[in-house]
Image (cartoon, rainbow, N blue to C red; front, side, top):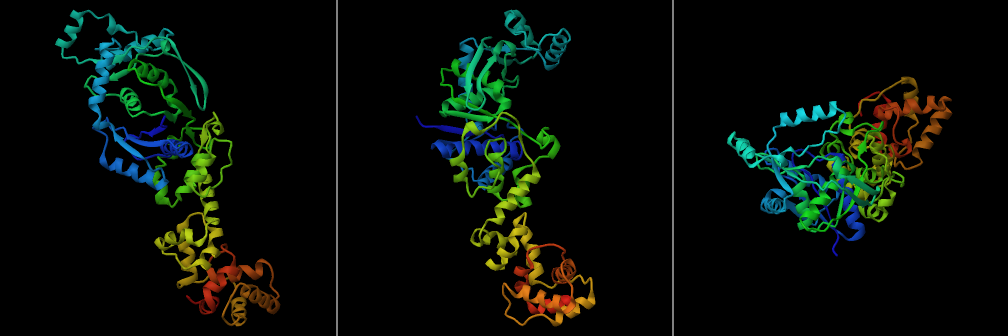
Length: 445
């Protein structure tokens, strides 16, 4: 049996970190097991789906490294959904309902006021042919509901363990709206069956849906895939992510300068028993992937933690790995520069600030003019190397008697205009003697 998983975004908006985590988990499972990874574009909502959003989703997935083996679009598969609906009608499992949304809402409120669950009462099944004809004469088009069995459906979730869904406690789901358009449920089941999806991996908000979908799989005579439902992403306080932290779209994070493997490392490890640390590549994340490591509590996404993971990743990268990114940021000054500044970076683009400091004219900050003038006279002759800073500061210390902060801070401010930054021993040779003289003398250099 060929294993197959799917990621099914709707092109009605941009890809969010929660969606991206689902895509990533599917992709890691596929790499670990040799499964095929299917990208299914759920564009049945023709009014809201756009080609621009679809292209953006594909661009975001490619940036993350979630490369799909196959692609399908639901908008090209409507004939299959109509055939499935007709099969359910013939079996007496798909029935027409004529209630308006206002009528249904009134019934829900009455049920709740009487302490009963707001489950649809199947009034449509009790309509006579004459009553149906009367509704049709009024111009009412029916919506279509799937008739649930009213039994407990049990399945073994690969993350949550044994799940039991009592379909008697659920309303018969609407599969087709009054305007003839399909809701999510039927197309999803038809596609999973027809495309031979072996494992459905998605968020835990679909657990109850699984009981419904199992019955539709059976009604269509299709095999039921294995299922795994991951905890949803929450913010650091456990609240809903989208409401507290904004959209957090992949596009936004990419534009902010986050490295894709840093984001993948965080999304793959939060909510698991593994430590949240940057991994070198997706192959490593795939090798470490296991459903048994995923906990039941919400996975908490913290933007500060993402920045920390991103920084740790950069601190371990060699020059060859970042050369193209440095060039794009206008900060490719060579391996010596990279090794000097990388311990102080959160984002790769931050290197551009230090490239300016070591190679462009800079207005110095002179906190003690007399001290800086004395230091200027003690600058060593070039060439400068790794020991030049120490020999220079030793000479200034001997000459002025300054030490500690009184020695180092005025020199750092004059040479970099910053109170903090990379090790001056590494920056000093990059700045060079001519700029050092100008800056210590209070001149732009």
